[in-house]
Amino acid sequence: MRNSSVSRKDRLKSKRLAPANYLIVCEGKKTEPNYFNGLKKKINEKYGNKVDILIPSIEVKGTGRNTTDLVKYTQKYVNYSCKFYGKVWVVFDKDDYSDEQFNTAIENCEYQVCWSNPNFEVWLLAHLKRIDRYISKDNILEELSKEFQKNGLGEYNKNDNHIFEKVTKDGNIHHAIRNCEYMENLNKDGQASERNPMSKVYKIVNELKEYLD
Image (cartoon, rainbow, N blue to C red; front, top):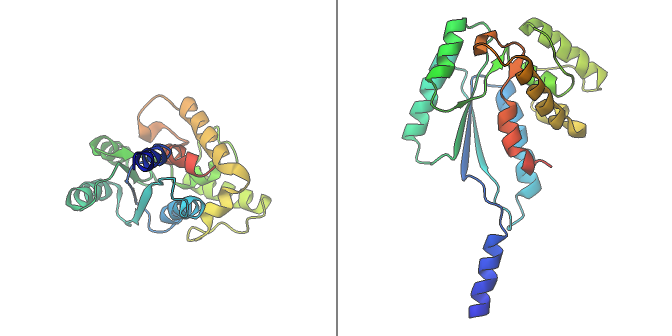
């Protein structure tokens, strides 16, 4: 009986612990949820059948709400949820919102804000190239389309259900993290509305990357 108890204890010690529930709330309804659901799918496919590894439970919500409403929605959703979330991320863009709207939404959010300036596509582009200067949202789409063609990924489509698989092939997810860390150092001064190019989305992926290797 004692040996059985010790054996079970050893097995429990060998498990990798992770927060029980992760919540990612996105401003967009397509591109961002498609990317994060792709990340979730890869983790589940890799570790889902391994009983000795605890993997995070990731919930992704694409809301279609504007920046200010998104923060309020997230706070209400978490407060009324029957789940306890180990980590909550709110994902939104500078896009066409005023500097005041953007900065205020970030300051008023009690959860971790993974904002992008000018938009989420700067995070996608970071998988494929380093961005070292100011870039508009239109130019990002142009650059992303060029890089997709150059890398044999076809046309860039905001509604692409396979966007995660496409941009993260060949270990590009690590390039994206490093490129965002580079942008962080490049634009470390000023408020978020002034920090272009930048995407804080890398913080989500950086925390979960151990499950992607």
